[in-house]
Image (cartoon, rainbow, N blue to C red; front, side):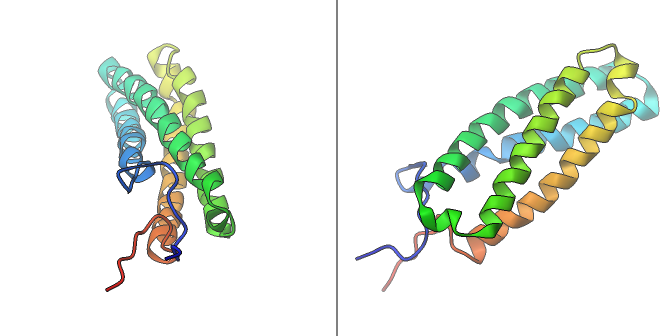
Length: 152
């Protein structure tokens, strides 16, 4: 029987890897925005250090999630046929690239690492993630990408 839904190429025992990995960079990038905001409010170095670590872990997790997502994107032409998949991929790539530069900016001394460039980049990345998360939802729930429908 032919599979009707676009398949997830990167999977373990039929479970897609990409959705397992994306919570890590999302949590880290949102956390970096929150710690940047706390640094802006308090000027306590601890918050700038937290941001730097969150960005580093988020970029590493984002690259791993991107590899799994790109494998899914390239693995099934039906996934590439959706404009939503292209926007999702490009938006997430932009978020990881901006976060990589934000990570480099956060290596400077505390005030110049956060204010204003680091805080602006953190906020921009979170806004992008809101948009690309909505697109990812649409890929799964509207277009059934990676969903294994069982027929009775």
